[in-house]
Length: 112
Length: 114
Image (tube, rainbow over all chains, first blue to last red; front, side, top):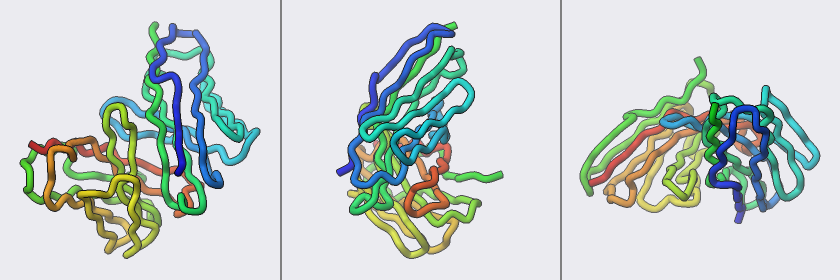
């Protein structure tokens, strides 16, 4: 069974204070690891897909990295508008084919 | 505009009264899925569909039914709702049945079962 664990559960940062969110996973044959952002009252919004260990992707102040066991979402010089819940999810193969397993999310709050 | 549309957005109903939450996507996606989101439990997959007339159970299918008669629609049916199905529900779609492409989510349906 695929499993995803995100840490920390909540993170409070000052504007400009860089940090990282962690996503640890176990999956049978990784087809993709996804990062989403979710604002209150909204559906998750896609950020990144990572496919293999060593891969990195960047978008504005966000950078996602992947190893064989975990992924990190690095936030550089965050702004208050980066406040949201960040979700990690994995899609596997074999008996997991077609299923997407989410972590519980990290609630990020950035104070001005 | 590419989107996943869910209706209703909010619903308060009573135990045992059958209800249907509709989901429609305009991106010609093969894959569609339903999730529920509960505090402390995150997003959990209820059912998914890789094509018309093909549906499979996710991690929490008990008490739910789905159908996929058309590519664009994937309704979620609660035939006899119970209070433990009070939750926030999301429909999603993807161009890839193998999920190596991201899913696009609707804005959610908040169900309260009294």
